[in-house]
Image (cartoon, rainbow, N blue to C red; front, top):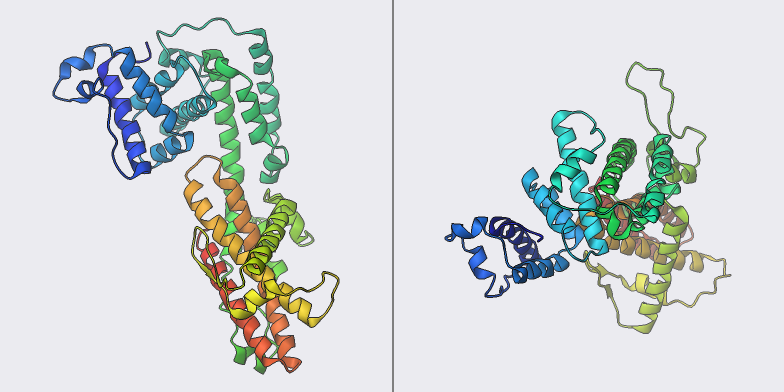
Length: 437
């Protein structure tokens, strides 16, 4: 039997009901056989075993609760340790398991021990006995030979993590995905106490290393993001002088790679340095530059096709905010300029297209990051994208500003005005991204 008493059933049902009603935005009916178990006026049910049909209903609700939903809710509304233990027992005791069950138990057990570490301010010793105590009453057969072979691979992962000194080493090694793949290879034996003990031990060790390196990276990103997005130049400023941004792009990105020692120390730079290229510094943050550049190129191609197919389209819908297009921006996408053409006309159109695509990518990533920032690892990909877009956006903003200056000098004040207005639009999007860091 998965749950011993009606009290335990009611506690998990209440949690799952809350999670699902948050997603549905309304309540849902429950089977007649379940209603008496949920009635707090019948305390006699608290100590009675629940019937199999009630367990089946709870397992059905569990199928609808994703690991992300469970993590997000419990991070915002921390449950007491007995509730975490109860959820672990329920999930481990299910007759049939899914990958979601493994993900949930992986997170719940790790979260339980991380809380203990936070309370005691001491690392967790080998957790086998604690896990056996949580799963008291369960019977487990000996591990299969295959599971023992997979288990023997975990110490090698720990040794690799031990020597990480920069955050980019985590991403370049694909450690998160490799560990996830290894855990999935256990199948149902993932829930065996021997396996759970090794997995929790790895998770806690990796989490401490991950958090330490991440904090260093986030500090550099904060420095980069807080360089201060300046307002876009006005047309008067462009025409009256050779406008220059106060800080060039290389120095802005250099702030990401800079780690100053505590005041009074030698001042030696730990990561990056004066000679580091922007690409090297971005890679040290764990950002896949080729992949991010591909995302951006794909969006330019996508927007080009959409706007050419819809001649009257003046707004690009997305999940963050409608992206309104000026006539010259839409026309830039619809212009049939050969890729080989090198001219002011080509630079003008390509510059506008890239600016709009950058804004569109920011508007894609902002809601994704906000939605997933409470998850353990899912937010990182969107975080990386936003850092990349912040750098590329500032870089392109300066390029468009210089093109606007050149346009005015060529006797094309209208083109200069159009470029300036697009620069202002790009600056507004960059400011929204900067606010996230």
